[in-house]
View (cartoon, helix red, strand yellow):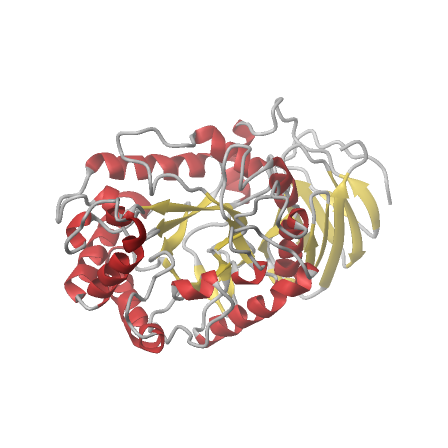
Length: 468
């Protein structure tokens, strides 16, 4: 059956889609795409519900639906002094949601939140709360990330406060910064009292800021560097113990939280190392590595795409195996950082779509590093490649999906409940049923609900209706 169907009450009326094609009319969106349609109605209708959990290889919502969470990192708070303006605002999150993204990873910094030992900065906490609110009102889930880069402001980076760095010498160490940072890192890993200080800060963040329904979970520490600790000791003993200290502190104030754990920094900076994260000993964890090694970056940091989607699959397969050993779902917390204007990188413009294609093959979610306003590394070309029709919350078991800016091919074994598909704003979807008896309706800007008979194999192709 084909033809047009106008939904004059899109939140209430179902369109029965049988084998054939039918366009589904969308609620009218104001000019500009991102709008208040990303607000209350869309959040209540389409976002997965807390508390979140894990089931095998999947993050699940309160209804037990398996989640595919795609979005971006939104960097800025971790390196911006609390009294200075952020490089983004509420409209930034509306623009992110308009691409079809459903999650943002927000880096925050210990140095901003606790500039003096035991003294928490109220203004810094208020700003994190504001950022979480911006994301929530735009209809986005949030992963809060305790970030470090170059370990500390003491070495020209961000993360660990000066009071937790012995002999902090300021940011002008030049070529000696890396060696000094390695010493400070080693000091931290060998002094448990500092790790417990960070655990106390995390508990304060979760209590004051992060314990809201739109917060998906907490990324405990960004790209932990081993310092001078031998890699095999760091991965098998030091890092798991550290995560237990942080995780237990968070669980005391938020028992149902998801905890995102990362491997050592070496895993994100190069091809996979020979040492892997040991058992963490906590439930409801998500393995969240960063996938940069397979991008074949040259010495200047230019990305290269020499092998198509297949070049990314060995690293994704290894990360998937690591997640299985940890009894955790896999979610890629960072990837990308692509300069598509570079004349040096090989096929840089194909890197983003090829990496997403590889992620589709593994049915894994991710966050692209990082959102900016129309410039590197989030150029218009990158934004277009990341704008996708993507399964979000699957009632049943996903079997296969191939995402695109204007198309989605999706197969699943249905269970009771609504499967939610995320759409770029302004796109009117046409649903073509390949298998099963499927009903579809739009439930606010950027969201399509699919329902199929429990136990049946359902398969659809979703494309933009003509004229979109």
